[in-house]
Length: 534
Image 1 (spheres, rainbow, N blue to C red):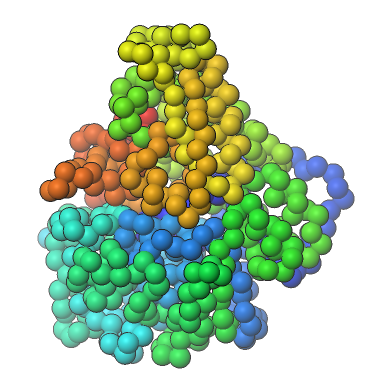
Image 2 (cartoon, one colour; image 1 turned 180 degrees about the vertical axis):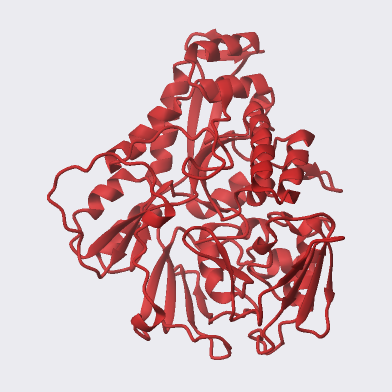
């Protein structure tokens, strides 16, 4: 699963373990395998098959953690994994990527490979398949690209976008020789241009901010993929798709996809009962142990560009002082958390010391510095210096206790385990942690997006574009005209002009090593700000 923007997930990890139903069980002698690091893409257990080897027809039941809060993937509430899983079947995209993260053209949607000119400005020209149409019979044209850029480039604040990454670099999107030719001109070079317009939404979604923000909340509207919407059942918590008879490309193999919302901790039992056809168990030890007892499933292992993290809300009154955030970071032993979660899954993890690159990716360096090193004594000393002194077992300042509101979703045992480990670690340095488990359907839109938390934990699902896709997570939030904070995907609500400038330079740099060096400089500043702990 790859996206042009980073998508959120409640549960995932560098060791993504998928359970696939209806297949032969894994063999094994029962001996415990040696711990292993995250595999490379060439080692992923994909079981790839040629198209002609896959049977026609049938139904796939696909588990979601919850119904999407918004089916517009470009809207702030829509950029999560559940929605991405649905939208990839419904909307056209310019590029796909292979298992190693290499982009390749969607030849159903585009009539030819795009052409690229870099001087005097970068210009990319797309040719849309002239047979491509939306579900309302409207042709897909250059105007759909134009209005997606207008809605997503961040200049019109009425659009509640998840990210302006890439779109803000575009100077114009114009008609070419006909309605099916799109000419995209960039202000500066943009190395990851293949990440954009994937997916493409219709102009009817993007012309009106109200439709962009609210029109797709309850169900998908005008679509244009190999499947079309059949129904959304809010009571049964299902989204049902069927083959799109207007689809102009190679017809879908399946007749039907049923997406069913099931709490993550219940998905393995649902698989065992035949209620779903697969599930991703991520770093959940109990699920892994349960899965090994199910005779009708196969466990497949892959290393994904995904990571768990503790995001720290820098606008919380107690956490505005960066020295306090740094002290709390040093009071958390992330190696111990990793070993507690992944050790029983035959993995030997160490803490990730980079926000941009995974440990098995080119560009990875240990950037975290002192902030990323567990040092309880230093943490205590820094809290003392910041005026938070021990009063019994709890630190207080001006009569107020330093206590952390740690918000997690219900039904995710991994989040519960992580928060409890952190609760115990911070108690050792005199900091109280209140764990607040909220309904999974409300987790992002009622708590994380509006900033109603001090700490939280979830996953970022990576993309083939680690540099450009990360920008919106760490970009310095700006104030909208009405005074509200434009966070894009920066739920920590902290940043600096230096970080923004380094990301801008990195995304415009076509020399990959220079881009890596620039973004790792940005990451050093991200660690200093204690945006999040990977």
